[in-house]
Image (tube, rainbow, N blue to C red; front, side, top):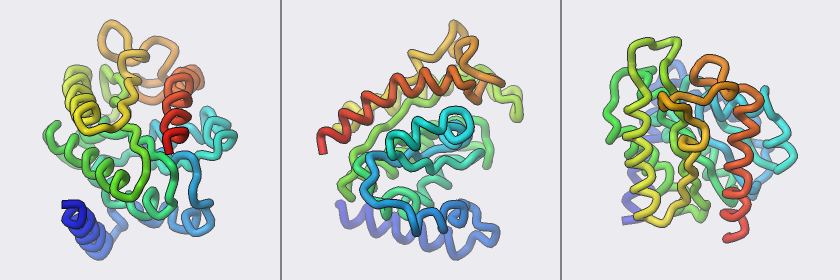
Length: 224
């Protein structure tokens, strides 16, 4: 079973990298950085613009803790899965923090079911586990509206996806980081002061997220 997972993922990565004429998954974004990145960091942060935003809003969370940021703005889970080997596995971190799914719900690359979003995240988790990396699956952050894709009504869909992610994590021995319940308002959107546009975080939003994630990462790394 484990061999099948790894072979299937290897084929997926090969097909995507050879056929995507415009570097669909953005393999090139961190190619040079990965060559010089230290192996064995405490954590790689895998995600989209929310993860990428640590660099601008709270860079010390990454630098002071020796984490590696591999967030790329706008990405969906299929793109993250495609680049998971070079951007996570080959860096051999102790843990990976996966924060993904909101751009899928936004339809950034077309419509996709919640079940298939969840499956992409599951595939990342299984690949990390097979390679001895502790897995932290984050809930998708609250979002009441997407400014670039209005009318998608994401709030309820995010709650549904998070329930799937929680169930999977709890039933398969992964760590689930519940960011949503601690950062939401009464609309199931981001709480006032934590966001700039209903999706992206302010400095206060990153401070809140750091207060939740840092102890979880510490426990994951201590368990290695």
